[in-house]
Image (cartoon, rainbow, N blue to C red; front, side):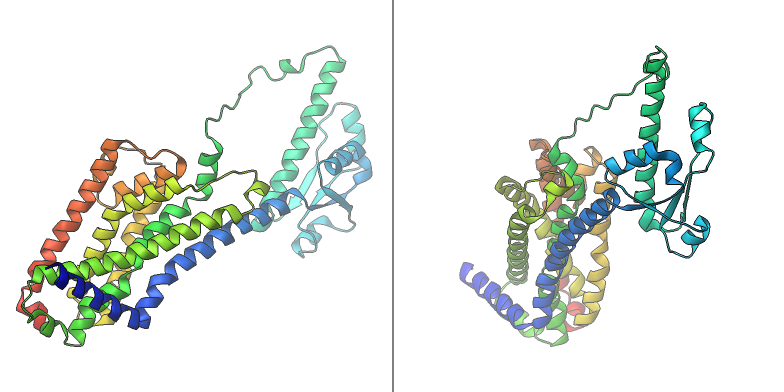
Length: 387
């Protein structure tokens, strides 16, 4: 039986390697997500650097020399401009303009309400970070001036701020950085559900379309053994692609310029081992579902269309785990969702308890076996075999 099973697996893998359509689906999604992750970090880095070092156009800089000096000390390049500031912003000649009125020195000296006008276009999303930074720096300077005035009159600055909120952040560097790298669990799950699409579709819908499934089933081999061989071929294909993707992540993350973002993040060998273990039931379930969907399709393209829509389910569940901050409860008992929760916890440094692992692995594996049993029944139906 083992020799027959091995022959089926080798046959399906050889057919898959000959199919260029299957080869494209094997590596497209992992390469896409790896490029996306690298590009995302570089994009965030560029946005942060632009928001920290930028040009500030000012009218009337001579009326608020201390403020202008403070802004320059904070790394802001102050440039004086002339003309109508509203027109300059509307014509996109300037991103924003800080207008200091001529009466600012008098009001500032007499402790009146000295106002500044920051003219910008709120509809331009690209400048919102810079605008917020200018506002923050001005508020910070204004607060220091207010404290100095109180101290000069013998009044403690605490009088103006009777209540102080102290931030106590218990998140470590790994947790903070994991929010940025939340794409990793999503990427691994999508790899699991897309890596063997081409192979699974070809083994069922493709063989039905080419009328090669019927001769295969006429061999003196049980339907269960034939299905097991096809299933193992799809599992092996997915596992290899997932392993390659995990190794690529392991070597890619250290090359990212995270120190420029003030972050530290490490993907360890333990992370990869734990992720591989929790991925086993997901691989079994994903490949079983792909084979089941493919057997109901009349052609390769039809099956591929169905499975492409089906891939949206794990993606939506992955985003649910990411944005809902799911930490436990009934979700751990839901197939796909439970392993997803554990996978996210692995990269945060909280891999979960033994009970949670047992529940997630057991339920997802049981779901895979149920799908496989239903698939065997379908292989015994003449309507399925003969179309």
